[in-house]
Amino acid sequence: MLRTSVLLALALACFAIASAQRFEPKALPPVKDAPTVGGSLTANGIKAATKESLLIGPGDLLHVTILREPELEQHARVLDSGDVSLPLIGGVHVAGLDPAAASSAIAAKYREGNFLKHPNVSVFVEEFATQPISILGQVEKPGTYKITTPRTLLDLLAMAGGLTPIADRHIMIERAPGAKQREERVFLSNRSGDALMANVTVDPGDTILVPKAGIVYVLGDVGRPGGYTMENESRMTVLQAIALAGGVRHTAKVKKARVIHNVNGHLDEEPLPLREIEKGEAPDEFLHADDVIYIPFSLAKNIVLGTSAIVASASSALIYAGR
Image (cartoon, rainbow, N blue to C red; front, side, top):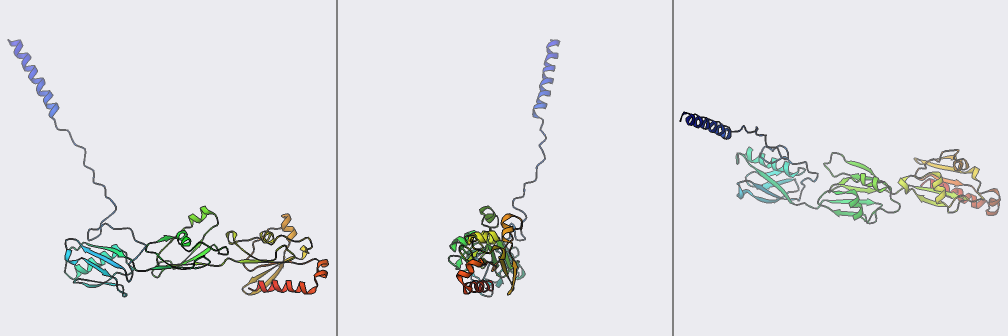
């Protein structure tokens, strides 16, 4: 009997220990702070948005709503003065602001007038007024094009039919009033990869100007005398110009070749060591727009052509150089 009591007591003790281990509450890991999504909130409870590149302007149609204030909802158009007229507060200047900044400006007006203590204002641009861009110069279809959002330079040049064969690759973008940088120059390379890297964004109201590429003139005793566009990256060397002109004829007096530079209307003539350049003994120098390469005729051919032909060629060179 005693032995049975002892065994029963031991069994109860083991059961109590096991129960204590089973039902002992486990320590929970510390609660982590909930991650913040999208950044801080504005004063009126709206998440701060990334600065918009397209700003509100005169003629834009705005949809203004205020949380828990349905009677103050408005579809209002921005006046020429840049103000939008709203109930209770009257005009608020919103031109040149993005929607988030306009929301803050309207909320501040309601607070300052003691109409609302904690206005939660939302501004949405339902319709942008016509803010065309102008594409001028050496494109197939110059003119104005209506866009309501920023577009890439390549997109807009495609809208204008692309560049003409004589277009310069140094493109000027004049930014709309209010932009931090008024002018931006972009070099649009002939290489597709480099062109994509230089594919900048153009905003409504900007102006794109594609100038005419420079022209180099090759005159005298060459295969095809005339003017040639500096198409390749807007640069051209002496040998490239000679090659485009059909090469030098065997009757040419190469030792008397010369190049005429037009520097701000001043004509500067210098000898051109063409044979040395062809042999690699002299550098193949780059030409400038309106440069004239003149390859004289040989003495024998001069006698055949006559003096008038030589004078005509020289006069043509001077006329072209002065353009």
